[in-house]
Image (cartoon, rainbow, N blue to C red; front, side, top):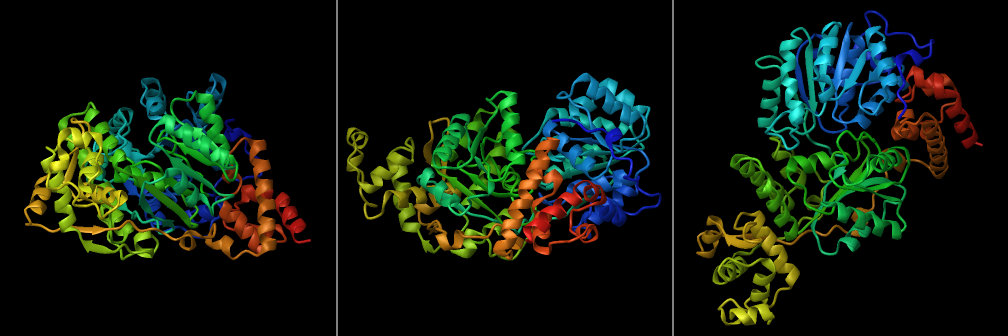
Length: 617
């Protein structure tokens, strides 16, 4: 991606006036009329030179929280970012609004890196984006020591903590910055940090100082749904049925599965791209560029894809395998609906997913405390998957946030029926016990259902008292029952013994009649309930407005390709939707559209007004 330096900025874009305030910058640089909740408070702390750890929901507008103080500060702001693509996109977006920003990273040739550093030394660049590895090199630290440095911004700050789920050793080195640059303010930003992780981040970056602001974790525009995996092809197509023309992500556990799913979707007529760490760098970059710049692309990916992806109009995220933890799941679904418009999520999971996740944890080279912590995290995710009450309520409770039932998840829209499942639980637990607690779910279910398999007949399990006691129930019923016993802590999957089921203390209490067990069927969301408009604003557009919106998107894509930037860098979807609805007829009216700042007005205004005028004929 081409790196634009501050020197290339048009001369007619004036610098920020002395004495300008955050509201003025928001309106006259970025083209927005109001701050989102929490932004102004965070900005105020950073402008005052105070340290801040800000936990904001994905899509909450964290970038403006440090970009506006950086613009108003007298010195340089260094932004630590984990990914090259994210740095380039952020710089391109800032440059598009007339803000002088540069990045220096390994993807640039020596000449481009030298040109960027010249902008920094000349005090033309207000923001410098670096990876943690590049920043913490002795040469860079020494060079920065000689500059007027106002602030360090740590993006994806959960990576600094060993308590988090995405710990990166190179991030932990950042804890040394406070001693080397005692006069700089620190702004740390993340969307994924529980209480222990938040304390650890603050202790590493500014011990005993600063403010932690938890803006909240709720993303009410995301519809949450979880369902047992039955036939992933049928279930995935049903989920995508009303999503033609939309962009989304489908997450898979393995590289091979990613290729299989992408191939299947392509055969079914979807514009699907596979993305995983086994691909060469150019293949991954080409795929990511297509996803960021084109409409209606389905990215089928492992978790190698995602961190730092700032595409506002992702309308859905589907997991075909169980994520590793609640934090990972929250972070991954958080990539949808960043523009605030409705988006949907679906998580499919089965016992094989649980077994694989347990195995990954046990094979991790970390210490026993780490493994125990990860198992507990997985337990929390399983509890979320098997929730019979509001799913969002369960999800946010993990982050110590309480809400009323949301009305926008599968369990709220179609509440599952809860029944006393104690008797059936005793049947299944008894079968686990009598077969020696050395078999997996498939064999135990066969025993309960009275299946005369060779494995059962060879071991004499057809002579057990529990043989055939559950024949009246289907295999899917018993599979769901096992999942809920595992999620409820009555059974555990022993990875060391090839995934056999073992009875816990909780399960023994149920078996002895000392405890009860409630069972619920997995809710099935009807096709009618799945049907949703692409966005609240788009829902109100007329047919003519829809046609105009399509023309505006085509113009945006053409301009984005010319500049080699993601389409949203030109204008986000929300801005185009407002244009199609309001149909401004002059530059003054166009300037009132949210997201149209003076730089973009000067550069793109006439072209978009012409497109709007043609659309009105």
